[in-house]
Amino acid sequence: MKKPLITAVLLFGLTALPAMAQPVHQPKANPVPMQKTQVAGYFRQMVGDYEVTALYDGVGNLDTALMAKHTDLSEQALNQLLDDAFVPRTHLGGMEGTIIGFLINTGRHLILIDAGKGEVQAPIFLDKQGRLLDSLRASGYRPEQIDIILPTHMHADHLNGIVHKGKRTFKNATLYLAEQEKAFWLDTPINMLPETVCPYVELARQAVRPYAKAGRVKYYPSGKEIFENLTAIPLFGHTAGHSGFLIESKGEKLLIWGDLMHSPAIQMPHPEVAIDFDANAEQARKTRQTMLKNIVAEKTLIAGAHLPFPGLGHLQKDGEGYRFIPVQYRLLDQH
Image (cartoon, rainbow, N blue to C red; front, side, top):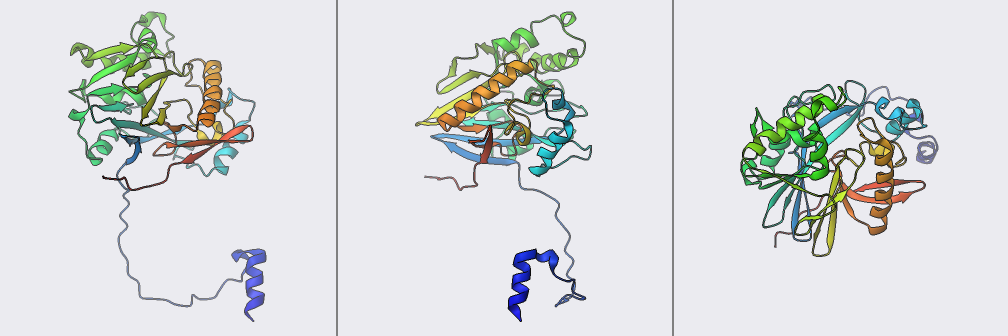
């Protein structure tokens, strides 16, 4: 009698079974309140002798309309890519876009690469206050221990977490900025900028101001080794001086790529798709296509500010596009 049932399940799936009138067992109810909390927003990965900690800052709402004008794909096709990848949607209907910073402990320096959005309020950000400091403290570190801040670029969700109510969040840190970013965000007269850009430029200047006042801002040319074993990689296009950071230790490498990509569900299979946030969409597209090819060829571990948390993993070629393979949870060797 059992064989026909098993065959039916295999051929038609569980939905083909007739509904049972009653469950087999009905144990006495044991209601327990749900916790509705999540694990702390950090994740660790060793790169040679360097400890890398991904720090969760929050989530944004990204609408496919931001990409629609930069591709031949229809909005329906873009949304289908999201659905096929089971991308969570926000209450506003857009895709969830994660915001992540990365903390590098070299043994000599504690370096924060991208600082989250801080207090910045905007419709795209779903958190009133960035969570990076909460994640930092949960990970065992304190803001005053950080001595180097390296934003990949000067958009608010990467920079403005460095200030709180106009004061420095990281009181013992020096802010390092690419000269190419400085030229646009800090040196260009406001009256020479498009009106739509001015609020974002002012946010950047507000973030830098208290560090500049304290003599805690330095500059570097993208493309150079800024510190020992840490090189700024020009990834221009998203912004004028958008840079990734290549970290090397004991033969292992990590590329922290900032905003090389915003939606992996769309831009992994279709790296040609740009987004409204790109200052120069064509340059950003070319940079992404070149870098993805190089990353696969060199099997480089990557970290992305807007990849699914913790944003760490490898890439594989997949047809005309790419596939993201996230790192796996592992206990770190304490010896």
